[in-house]
Structure formats: structure tokens, C-alpha cells
Length: 210
Ligand SMILES: C[S@@+](CC[C@H](N)C(=O)[O-])C[C@H]1O[C@@H](n2cnc3c(N)ncnc32)[C@H](O)[C@@H]1O
Image (cartoon, rainbow, N blue to C red; front, top):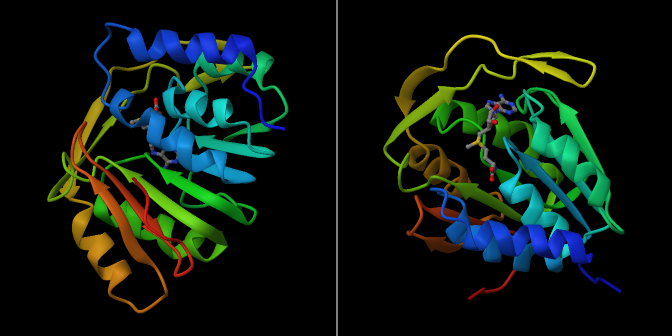
């Protein structure tokens, strides 16, 4: 039985009604709804854990979250995972080993060549959905803002490093087009164009969503 623990639901509702600017907020209900029908969820790009919170609210059996950096908000979330077995991996999404998963959410860099490496390595491990964020804002021109504030982690202690650096390159759409055009059984299920864009790709057996 998948019931969202009370504290997680409160955190989620607070996030939805928060006045802080957030490009993810407009997609959180979609992520939560998709994950509700998945036993195993994997995400690349965690940062302060907005998507992580949406996935935890869906209470899948397993949630694996991968990021180069561990933010304090994720350490806090680890105390409230309910029935979900939650694992944070501080690794590079292009090299990490993942298990078979129902849903892979990719929200790491917003660069086409980076996405290509992630899809080449991991798409075969995904049973239902690959979900991509920033498909409008980084559709044609890609970017990555490297926030180095939390690079240095000693145990649980976090220290402040350099300021962020921005990289630019090819956007996500050319990589997605090549992926969908390669006759690998994946198709586009839905493209939400608000809140910087969220694209849902599905396996052949996956039908339409709202
Ligand atoms: C846009 S943020 C993720 C936001 C998050 N999904 C949310 O809902 O709050 C992008 C994150 O991707 C991480 N990232 C960038 N390159 C990565 C890589 N190669 N492997 C893993 N994580 C990466 C960054 O450290 C950053 O925290």
C-alpha cells in the first residue's frame, strides 16, 4: 500500500506553494504521478531535491538519486523516506552503474553531448519511461552552470568552494531526435512545454499520459 508519509506530504505541499523561483515546480505533479506506477526510479541531477521529494511522495520500492554533489537538503530527506529504499550516489551520471529501473529522470547538465553519453550507457536499463527536463530552455542551445559550492564534502560536513562556471554547447533536442530516430523501440509520449520543458519518452508498451 503506497501512502505518502505525513511529513513528506507537508514538505511537498510547502514546496508547491513556496514563493521561491523554481523551474521544477510546474512538473512535480507529473513526476509524482509517473513514479506512482513504478517500482524502481532512478534520477540524474538531484541538487536540493525537488524532483527527489516528488519521487519519494510516490513511494516506489526503490529510488536511486545520482549527483556529483550532496546537498544538505538531501541529507535531511534521508530521515523521511517511508517505505521507499532510498540510495544517494555521489557519482558521475555518465559512468555510474545503474540497476534496471522503470523510470529514469535526467536533469543533470543541459548539454546534448552529455545527454548522449547518459542515453548510450543507460537507456537499455529502463523499462518504461525516460523523462528529460529543460527540453525547451536547453532544446537548441545547451548550457551547464557548474555550482561548485558543495564540491568539498568531508563526511557530512560541507564547505564552500569556488563560484559557479557556465559551459555552453549543443542543446538536447538533436540528441533526442537521434535517439528516437534510431529504431530502438522508444517513442515520445508527451512534451510539456511550460516550466522550461519536460519530455516523457516511453517504451513501445507505454501508452498516452495526461
Ligand atoms: C538542475 S540541477 C537538478 C535539479 C533537481 N532535479 C531538482 O529537481 O531540484 C542539476 C544537477 O545536476 C548535477 N550534475 C551535473 N553534471 C552531473 C553529472 N555528470 N553526474 C551527476 N550529476 C551531475 C549538478 O551537480 C546539479 O546538482
